[in-house]
Length: 478
Image (cartoon, rainbow, N blue to C red; front, side):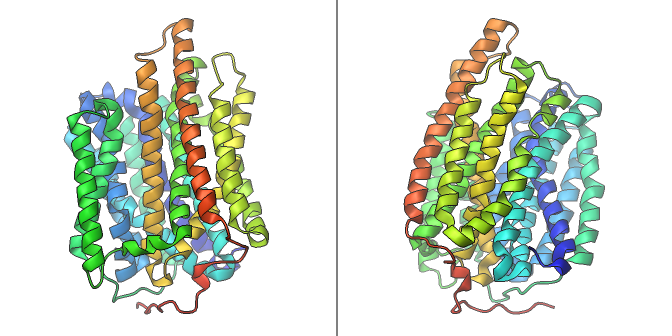
């Protein structure tokens, strides 16, 4: 159990995670309203209104984590909440699409500061005995954030203006900042930590290019010059970053840490989890509206069964990990996610919602079982004074996995179905294409799961680099 004295801080930090994560999904349910709004955005501008948040968020995560290590994680978190509120206000006031997009990007920059800071503060406050439970709670907040985004976006789309979503975020971010300031103590930082401006720029632009290519792949085509240029740019910059980091005296991120088989497995496993989850998020709203005829608000509520496994299983998983080690949890959890996707892939217009909800429960149990163990691995395999950097790496893997999940299922869906189902026959075509897309994701996830399990072989209970006494101590901040 998390220390009682720190529970107010736990609640405040997890609320920050939930709000930042909710903005990834909420906008998707407002696309029809935005398209018909006075902004009159083009199709490309609508795409950027959705993707600007994710692209900036993913691109800045690792440098933002390092910045928190250097300057203090509580300060980074408060700065992130400020940027998040400013971005939301900018979007709410937008009179032209460019301003809406800029506001979304600013929110993404705020989220990039929020996510690593919350995780690293939680790890510090929990202490070695409670790290697994704290990270299980953080992972739950991430999952609930995605669900809150679906529910909140659906309710706003049904009953309010799209601007209301952004206006709601402004006072909410302010309240969270007050809660963090009052409940969260300052944690040790490392003033000597390298920010590495050159490395930060190379890595940020590289990640932005890669994520941009993944997101744009379904729209432009994977073999288009547009997408290939993005991937080539990202790859070239990543190579330059690795070369720079290899030679630099104090690099932003030393690529030699990936010599750790567990770190590689944990990073891949984290990406695989959210690869599966967000592929489901992408098709869920379309399936429930097109095939089941649900309203926007009911569509947002219908995915709530995903909360059950994510809420209940992590506590059991934390106890099982102490006894059996991470391997059974990681392998079993990824297997359940794959099974859940295969079950959902069989759904059609005649599938009872109760059965569909059961399929969601299987997937959510898998997420609850493996995601906390994977997070513990990634954070524990880096030194304690680089907790922010470790949490940034974990979250970057999650965001890239999520973007890939949407891209893969979206590409398969677009190749087999176009337009909007207006008849029973067209609905059947959609659910068939959805099934093929989800089965493709499930197969790829299972392949990744095998690689992850191989990487975890030999990991017994209780092993954690976080307990290594040789780690460099951090310095206290004022």
